Figure 1 (cartoon, rainbow, N blue to C red):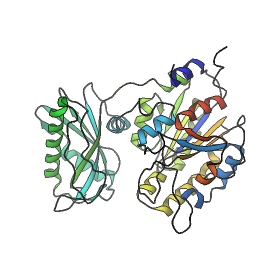
Figure 2: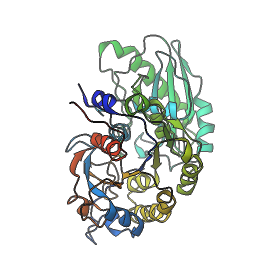
Figure 3: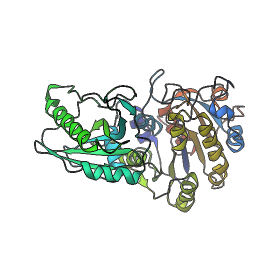
Figure 4: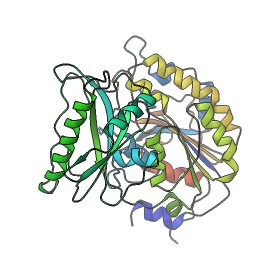
Amino acid sequence: MDKLELIREISRASATKIVMLVVDGLGGLPDPETGKTELETAHTPNLDALVVKGICGLSEPISPGVTPGSAPGHLALFGYDPVGCSIGRGVLEAMGIDLDLKPGDIAARGNFCTIDKNGLITDRRAGRIATEKSAELCRLLDGIVIDGVETLVSPVKGHRLVVIFRGDNLRTEISDSDPQQTGVAPVDVIALSQQANHTADIVNRFIARAREILAGHYPANMVLLRGFSQQSPLPTITEIYKLKPAAIASYPMYRGLAKIVGMDILDTGTTIEDELATLEKNYAGYDFFFVHIKETDSAGEDGDYNRKVASLEHIDRELPRLTALNPDVIVVTGDHSTPALLKGHSWHPVPVLLYSQWCRPDGVCRLSESACILGGLGRLPATDIMPLAMANALKLTKFGA
C-alpha cells in the first residue's frame, strides 16, 4: 500500500477547514552584504505571531539536492509523488487557460524571447511583454499546419504562451528548445525515442516558421518551447482526502494544476488583496483552500532581493484577513526556494509552518530558514505536509487495529 492509498483508507469528511498558503519560491539565500535571507530581512510580525503558536520545519519538495520545477513542487505539497505523478508543464499551462485538450494532443509551454542578429538569446522573457502584445503575436502563429499537424497557439500571461500540436502519431519523448540561459542559441528539439522522430521534426519546423514570422517584432522575435506533454488522469483530492477543495490562484499554470487534481477554480484577481477577498467570499463553501502567491517567485527569478523582501512584507500585512477566518489548520510554505542570489529555483529546503490547536508549539519564533531548521517538524518530505494538515484537522482515523 502506498502513502496515497493509506490516506484514502483512513481519511474522513468533517466540518473542519484547512487553508494552505503557498508562497511561491519562499526560500532564499543570505545576501553577501547582510548575511540575511529575504525572509530574515523582511519584517513579518503577523507570520511570526503564527509561528509562535505553530510548529515549523524545512521541507524537501523532491529529494535532497534536486531542484524542483513548479509542477512537481506543488504536486508534492498536495501529497502526490512528484516523480511518479509527473505532469508536463505544457498540459498545466493549457488547462490553466481552459483549453480543451483532445486525446493525442501535445501541449508545450512557450516563452516569447529576444534573439540578437547572431541568433543568440539576449532575454528569455522578451522584456516581459504585456499579455495584450503576446495575444497579437499568438494570432500570427496560430493555425500553422505542418504535414497535417495543426498548431493552436494561445497567450497565457505576459511573455508566456501555449502551443498545442494536434495530429496523428505525436509523441512527448522530445527535448526542449529552451536552453534556459542567455548568450546561447535556442536548441533544436531532439527525439528521445525512435517513435518521436516525426514529432521532433514537426516541432522544429514550427519553430523555424515562427522565427520567420516574428523577425520584425523585436523584442519578441523568437519562441522557446518546453514541457511537451499529454494529459493523463490522477486520483483527485476529493477521492483521496474526502475534501471539498478550492484553488485561488491568479497565474494560469497553478489553476491548471489545481484543476488536474480536482479542485474547483475560483475566479479571482491578480493581487494578494484580490485573492484574500476571494477566500473570504467563498470560505463557507469549501473545507480546503489552496491559495497561491506568485510575486515572491517572480522577484527571486529576476534577482531582485529587495522586491522579494517587499513581497514577503506585503503578504504579512494581509495575513490577518486569513487568520480572522479562524481556519482549523493553516499551512504556510512554498513549492521550492527561489533565491534572488541565484535568479532561479534551487535545491534548498523550504520553510514550512503548520498551525492548529492540536499542534505542539516548538519554541520557534520566526518564519525563516535559520529558525525553521530548529523546528519540531525537522526536515521532512513535502509529501508529508498534507497528511499532517489532515491529521491536525482531525480528518484522519486510526490505521490498523
